[in-house]
Image (cartoon, rainbow, N blue to C red; front, side, top):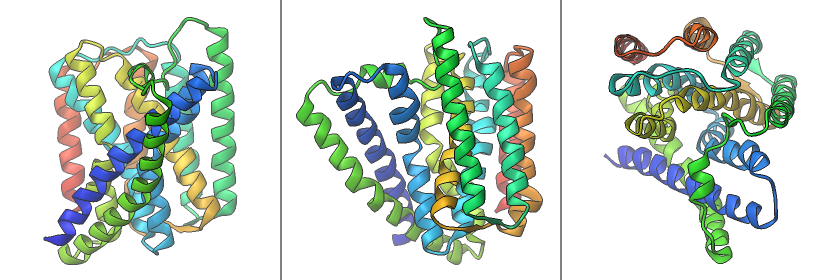
Length: 313
C-alpha cells in the first residue's frame, strides 16, 4: 500500500508545489515590470510543465528511462483524447482562437521530428539541442505574432493564473520557496511509487509512465478544460492542449536529453509514438477547418483513450 501513497502523494505534491511556484514567480515578475506576454511564455508555460520536467529528469537519472519518455508521450496522448474528449461531453468545443491553426500545424511537425529522433533508440545531447532550438524558434515566433496581433489573446497565457497571483511580495517569495522544495520531493515520491507499482504489477516502467504518471501530470489541463466547458469558455481548451503538447516535447524532452541521454524503449518506438502522432493529427481538421468537437466525437475520443490504456497495461 505504501507505494500507492507514494505515487498519489507525490503527484499531489508536484501539482501543488508547481502551482504555488508559478503563482509566486508571476507575482515577482509583475513587480519587476516584466510584460504579461513574456510571463505567459516563460514562467507560466515552463512552470505548469514543472511536474513533468521533474519526473522526466528524476526518472532518467535513476535509470527509469521508460517513465521519463513515457510520461511525455502518454501526457500528449492523454491531453488530446481525455482532456479534450471529456469536456466535449459537457459542451461543444469550438475552435476559433487566433493562432490555433499555425500552432496545431507546428505541434504536428514537432511530433514528427520527435518521432524521427526517437527512432535512433536514444535521445542524446544532439537530440536535446535540436528540440531546444525548435523551442527557441517557437517562443520567438509566438512573441512576434503576438506583437503583430495586439489585443488578441495568446494561447499560452493563462489569464486566470495571472489574475490570481499573490499581491504580497513576502507571500510570493514563500510560494517560490515551497515550490522549489516541494517539486524535487514530489518527483522522488512519484518515481519511487511508480517503479514499485510497475514491479508489483509485473509491467514495465514505460507502461506506468504512459498511463498512471501521464494521467497524473495531465490533471491540471483536465481540470482547466472542464471548468472552461462549464463556464462556456471551452474555445480556450484546444489552444491550451496544443501549447502543452509542444512544451512537453520541446522543453521537457529537450532539457532532459541535453542533461542526460534517454534510451527509448522499443515498444514506444513501434507503438506509442505512432498513437501520439495519430492523436496529434486528429486536431488538424479541427483547427484548420474550425470543426467543433461534439458530444459524439467526445465519446469516440474517450473510447479510444480507454482502449489505449487497456492495451498498454
